[in-house]
Amino acid sequence: MTESQFSESEPETDDAEAFGSDDPGDNVARPRRTGLIVAVAALVLAIVAVGLSAVAYLRPTTSSCEVAAWNSVPVASEIPTGWRVTATDVYPDNQTTTITGPTPAGGAAASTIYASVTCFGDHAADAIARSEQASEDAGRAVTPVAGLGETGFAIAGDTSGASAIQFKRGTLLAYLASSGTVSQADLQQAGSAVDAAIRRALGDATATAAPVASPAASGAGSVSGSPQPSGLASPEPSGAAPSPVAPELEALMPTKVSGTTLSVQSATGDQVLGTDSRSKALISALASLGKQPADLQLAQSYDPTSTLDLAVTGFRLPGVPVTKLEPVVLQAWLIAGSTGVTTTQTTISGVQVTEVSYSGSTSVSYVVVRKDAVLLVESGSAAIATAAIAALP
Picture 1 (tube, rainbow, N blue to C red):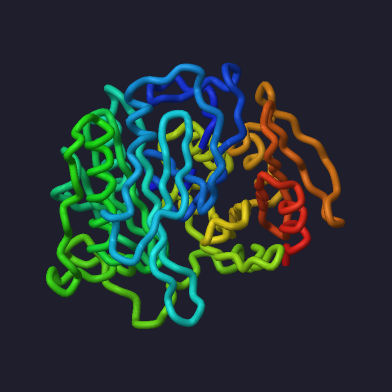
Picture 2 (picture 1 turned 30 degrees about the vertical axis):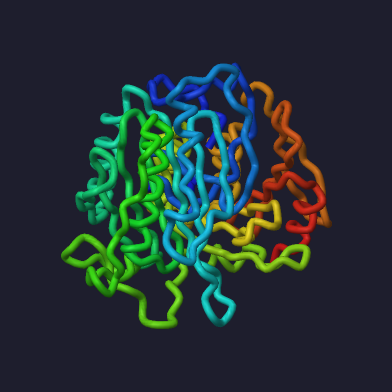
């Protein structure tokens, strides 16, 4: 979805900057299903398809840089012990891997690390420098990180529990964002696994991940919580879940669809929007309403096991009527009105929705207004999307 999960997002809108943007007129594909909380700052994990395995349409021609990004998938033996790779999503110039932690006692959702590797080509050095500056300008605690890539930095967690690492190697940029309580050691180990995968993708067949000291040995704690002098963060109290960033919005999100229990998480725009064209379009639209990214609340419901092909994303902008927010979501986020994109008003499960269709795509996207929020329901199955709309609180 930078500190962009959004997340996450193709196709790109018209963008004069040479950071891998696509012209929708060349190849219209539905935007990625976003993984907001995986805020991918400058890379837009925007993303990011949280726990899903949808594959967006690829460009007709590819470069070795893009192929290297697609091949930079960490192997199970190098990620943190007890963690597993649960999804890999491929997009025109990047891929995102979902790494899921052990299931905690008590039925709570497992913590997750979203790792995105993007081809920036000759602009890689400029891109990571801009991303680091943007994080500092946003007031986030940024510290250099050693042992990953040629250069990199860590972004400290906050009360939402979000934290991230970004680094550059060659023409590729990697961004790892955490969701839930993730230790510094686990995030660093995941980063080392991704770095090794990048080195192999770039031709170093013997590259392996360097082990990271355990929290007990290194004194590292959880990276979620309030920033500490080290630039990292202290752990939440034992057994305590991070407080929701947007509780009013989370209350409007579905928690169970077709018998599957969904995880619900929230963040603010400054944590998840990046420098991709879709994020920039959304930020520009917010500015036209007199708002900043930090004013925008975002939430997502998803199946952490990746079994249910569904993502429900919520948008809320306190102080702005939903009649003004809905067009922003449609036009800036879903590129409604672009060539090959159509919108239709319809009713599903007794709920009035706007269906957004993309030329050549069989997936469905429905926009629903709920109180003062706009919800986006996306799935490869119309039946699952219909069930999700029926399950809205």
